[in-house]
Amino acid sequence: MTGRVEYLEDVIEKALMLGLALSTGLLLVGLILGMPGPLRWGIVLLMLTPVARVAVVTVGLALERDWTFTRHLDGRASLMRAHRLQAVLFDWDGTLVNTAEASFRCYEKLFGSYGIAFDRDAFRRTYSPNWHLTYSALGLAEDRWAEADARWLEHYCEEEVVLIEGARDALRRVRRARLRAGIVTSGDRVRVARELTSLGVAELFDVVVCAEDIVYRKPHPEALLLALDKLGVGAAAAAYVGDSPEDVQMAQAAGVLAVGIPGGFPNRDALAAALPDVQEATLSAALDTILGPPRR
Image 1 (cartoon, one colour):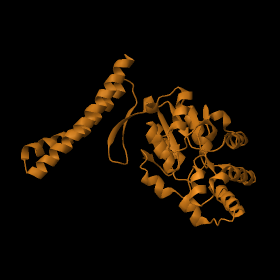
Image 2: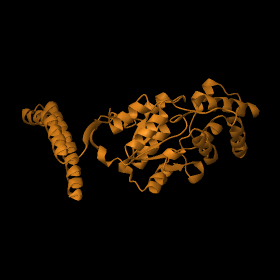
Image 3: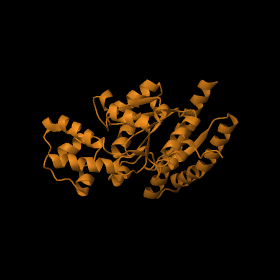
Image 4: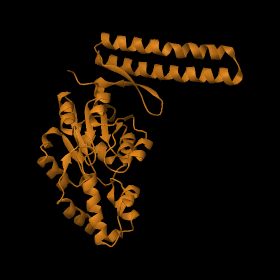
């Protein structure tokens, strides 16, 4: 029975997408060529779309399936099958922990030690979760990068790191929904593991993938695909939440639902320009969108 229902879902989704494309094509032909026949049928198909959606949801309820509709930022309508979601993975810095100001102060000290000026404008222009791109953009020689990494960590150890407001509740909500949870971060494992423990959230994650675990950094999908492999979850059954355009691009490249939330780092415009599948102002709002509002 399960296999037949899964097949039915795929047929329904493809049929709805085909109907939308067909109605659009007929409308264009009718308008451009002045042909009333295609125009009339295009309008009819377009008007039938809401009826079809109601029918699908009714069938879904009869089969006890959780079917909902969503619309991506690029305008494509899609059938979002919430019952298939098995895992929610998160970026760490800027998404779950508030490290933006700490990172700025560390960069300021680091580049100052090399005689390189670093201010808010430089932070805005050069910020990337792949900090080697920041090094390169500011002219730090590549043979100094390993040394710079060590210096940055020394400065960072002097900073106090706190969770983003609502992050702990968001993580617990994912676990209450009986979903797997993970972290995919560009940060080094020693630092991230220390912060997970000190903040008391280490037990909320099933997998943590850090910089040492992969060869290619974000936006390459290697790290996210590795996390999914460790979880035993397919890309179509997962969502990734992050605060940078590289997070969105990584999720898109991996075939995962890309969820963007702006953080404290200077990349909000770039995040929106990356066109995440879902973009919300807060973690809580993002989970409302992908999980549904919390039950009271």
